[in-house]
Length: 87
Image (tube, rainbow, N blue to C red; front, top):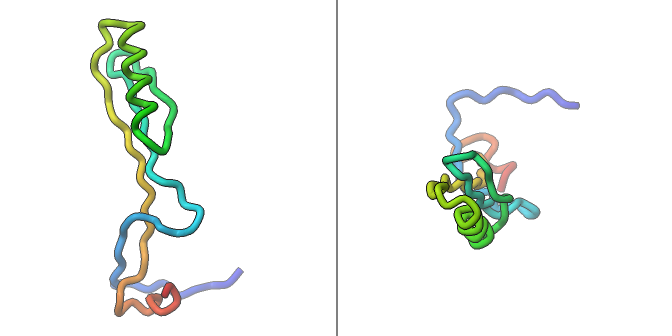
């Protein structure tokens, strides 16, 4: 294990994580009546189908919360001493 300096007041950026092996965004829906939820998948179609089937079984359950999980990565901005290491 190595000890590294703490760099204060350095600029960083944050954005989508495009590193190899990183998951794509995950989609899920949750019933706002009973809090049952679909599985999280890499596309919105299956959670949407789950919501329609759930409403079919429980006609009074018509409200849903969309949950989209995106993966982000912080990277050193130009001028940050760690920028060259990241590039």
